[in-house]
Length: 103
Image 1: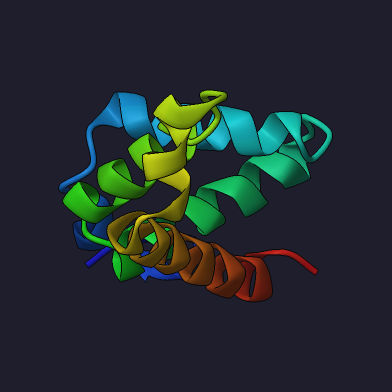
Image 2: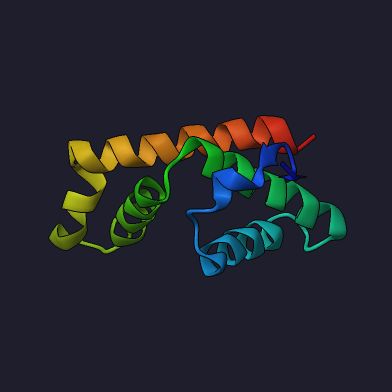
């Protein structure tokens, strides 16, 4: 099976293209928008997708986004056990991707 980065393409099949592009564009913006950043960020996405099912990725992303809401409305998204677990899963996948894809 063909590979992208260090992970088989099957690992990312459940992720919609727009989610892949959003992740890679965001990653590239934080890493200099270079060709090297493109390769590293694509690799990073592949690693995250191989470690985290799409549903869990969306859950964690939603908690992170909603946790930025100020006041009492955002507290649930920052402090609940479910939010902490989902965000923790995403952070661990991102840390693994950092180790595998970035020098």
